[in-house]
Image 1 (tube, rainbow, N blue to C red):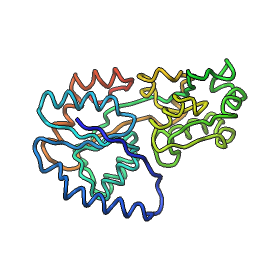
Image 2: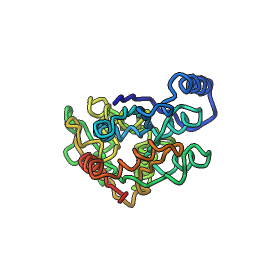
Image 3: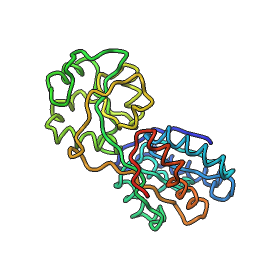
Image 4: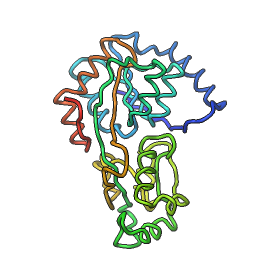
Length: 271
């Protein structure tokens, strides 16, 4: 099982770097046509799924003898790479919007799409540098502002990456966005935001509840109400109707995979 992390980029005009990415994807498709080999499988997965997918890929390889190559990044970048022709068998997004985007462009096999997982949203602070004020909570605006006075609020890209989109929506719902926005430091994906807080480089962060399961360097300050943002859903789909992609999707619903997902803080939606 191989895992690769990639940065994310927001939605916008096709910059020169995007054209280079498109050319690179075409070259990769020629040099590494993963779908052409029965013993390899390429999975594009949201960065927040890192730990869970690594464990699931290992279990799948042991059971089926198929090597699983993981490409982990923000959902927006993964969807763009599919558009540019990057080789992948399965796509797992951290929100429905980017899966809808891929489906509208015939980048996935729509009949294979499932709602796989759910998640929650939390506010975190570093344990290496205790909060400047002891009464941090989403209800204490002044305490939040003190906490980010010298170190920013880390969030994934708020206009492109699902975690950032959910986070901005939640802060707006709670009436906190206008005051906290000047202190926001945006990152390419949610795991990068988590890392900033874990290092103490950010005073606060908005991440998924699943992100903090194996992150002892951060402390959950508060949990966002579920009604403060759209439901957090992880849809999964095959990029074509190949049997090995279907087999892996089925494995994601197996008792082994479900146990791993639950252990990593996700809610399993698929039966």
